[in-house]
Image (cartoon, rainbow, N blue to C red):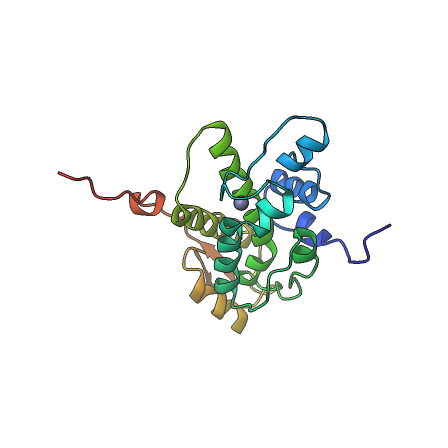
Amino acid sequence: MEEKKEWPLKLVWSSPVLPKVGVFTWLALKKRILTGERLSRLGFLGPFRCVMCKKADESLDHLLLQCEEAQMVWNFLLGKLGWQTPLPNSVFELLSSWNIQSHISVFSSVWLVAPSLVVWEIWKERNRRIFQEKEESSASLLSRVEREISESVSAAARNHSLTKYPYSSEDNFIQANWPLVNCQPVNGSWRVSPLSEPTKDEVKWEPPTKE
Ligand SMILES: [Zn+2]
């Protein structure tokens, strides 16, 4: 049976994220990502525990949405978008009900780039834990997500004219919540300032060493 809900094509293919991020999101929506659940269906022997929370088996919807780490990231994002909505249980449901009407302005394109970048960053962190045996703190995962989204939006702003994308009240709201989106309307176009390198604190927080 075909899914009744509409495929969120716009989020995947019209979003100013890197093509590989769009492709990954597309595969995630089609449940084609090689998660533990899929590997065991293909005959590989587990166990395939979720490396993010270490509490449940790894399925696509668990890893990218139901896991407590994923919930933290999505709730962080919803908070910064000012969108109060309960998170559904499947990635497909979340993305197909995503609010994508309101991105005609530059800052509002945060709405368009954010979902793909969230699933991509969670996936990268999962792989880092499995293949490099490195683990980022929750705080650095959040700041990485914020930074990636902000950079994508700023990069997209370079191609926008102010005439086509006039500054709106929605921009105002997003601008206040996303200080890393580094562009300003100047003389009829968007001026994008390069983002400074992440500070040491932003990249990694380490507890003070004991004497
Ligand atoms: Zn988990």
